[in-house]
Amino acid sequence: MNVWDSLAKLLIGFGVLMVLLGALIWLLGRLPGVGHFPGDIVWRKGNVTVYIPLVSMILVSILLTVILNLLAKLWK
Image 1 (tube, rainbow, N blue to C red):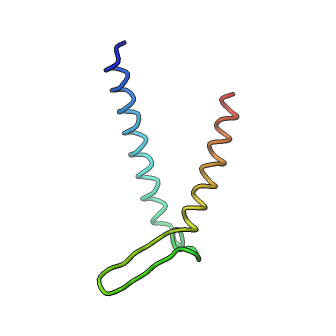
Image 2 (image 1 turned 90 degrees about the vertical axis):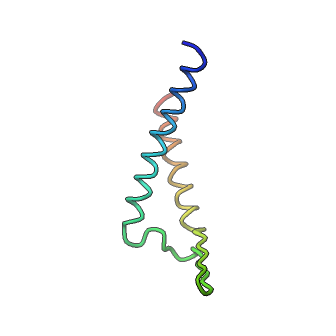
């Protein structure tokens, strides 16, 4: 197996992961209340809206940390 085959497999795997992550985010965005937590900043001025999901980012970070730690323990 040469370096191009390895790179191709890595890019395909990354692409599949991105599609799955995009589908998950799309589905979570359709759930009521997700992404509209107290602490998420929304600033509107005329036709401009700036949305900074601080609390949502913290919750996603905690969730991913727990999931990745569980997977790491399973693979050891």
